Image 1 (tube, rainbow, N blue to C red):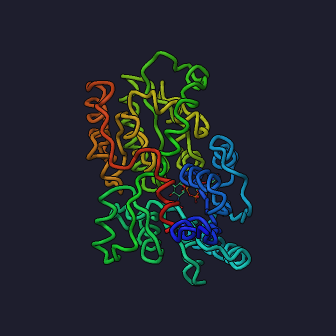
Image 2 (image 1 turned 180 degrees about the vertical axis):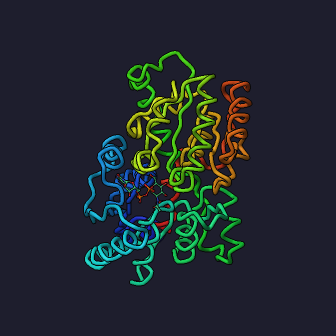
Image 3 (image 1 turned 30 degrees about the vertical axis):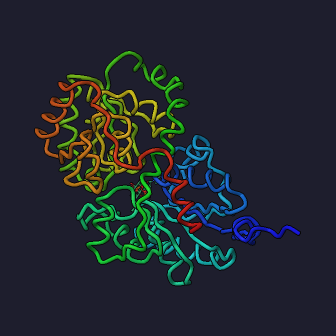
Length: 381
Ligand code: UD1
């Protein structure tokens, strides 16, 4: 009689451990991080039962729904419908509405991404309930505690059980804050999974034709940080720089709802409209934005994610902030942190435009399109 090999029994006949994972999304920069993770979980149906919870921090079609469509993210299993509010009101509302979902679903893991208010709110609910929480994009630090996101990052990393980092600087930050190495896994940048998967489709769209940009050099601009758009002083300095740059090439500006609101409130509507070749448009979906960013001559932004996407694409980026939590993008050579001084922005734009159109592509380790698989491997460990 032949008995079964004990190794065969151990590997193949043990009861499979099915992990129920709640994946939290809340605001626009979350969707492209969660989409590849949920897709990877669906490819391992014996190991993962993924649920998607949308807090509703962002709710407009342009800020939320279009991303579900573009990224083929399944409709949320639960929508908390939180909406806008002060930081305290929004964070508290997410906590109150997320807690019963966790109690009802009893997940093995809750996965939070990025640094928005929904991230810290849901992580805090989990740690109080003793439910394991993993943070994707852990360890990034701007060292600017006036940024709401910096507080969200610091606190989430302190309480999460497992910290998935995108780059070596993030590991160093966490270790310097006393976080045990055993809680940290460097897995790479999950946004690049989405970018690689969608780049060809995005580039085949007629976005440039629709905007009259086919065959011409243009710059792409995004602005939404409260420190840039909520006060007249900083916004004026940036507008002066944009006016000077439009003498060299047109700038396309998909306007974030927060920025549209403050342009009106600060009495800047006429000034913005008067800048010839500053083309303001509604916020774009993921694929249309990627179409434009992948072919831009220059990107100007105060977003975190766009600094990383331009590194992956090899497109010159000027970051209109005094600091960045993504120094690896500067190290790779695509990103320059210029601040909001008019002369500095114009001078950096001139330098970037005089340089070669495309820089040699250097990529940080593990920004390779397989980060979501490494995250799943670690959860299964
Ligand atoms: C939030 C995140 C920020 C992220 C950004 C990306 C926090 C603290 N901030 O900032 O880290 O970079 O999202 O977009 O979590 N609004 C709409 N429709 C929407 C959402 C917002 O009109 O779907 C308007 C509302 O007037 C709202 C304002 O935008 O009050 C700001 O929204 P909020 O979510 O508070 O912060 P963001 O500036 O979007």
